[in-house]
Length: 102
Image (cartoon, rainbow, N blue to C red; front, side, top):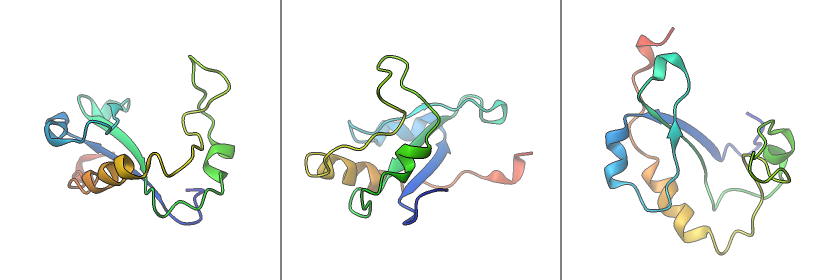
């Protein structure tokens, strides 16, 4: 919600979708009770991010294995651009049906 350019997208989805995911696509187990058995991804649009770092500043999640890092961190864009472009394209997976959520 903090990104002024709306370059961060979040999706929950069935794990079977990951069979065609790029190697660098990251996901984690969805932790909400209503999403049991689903996967969860937060993805940044690599070519639209301006590097303002507001997302990093407000992120409350700490990296438990390396405390100087958070769940989202700023990195130089050029080395990540190709792989993240593929990840962003893959995120065009269908939206889940939210009518059943309470």
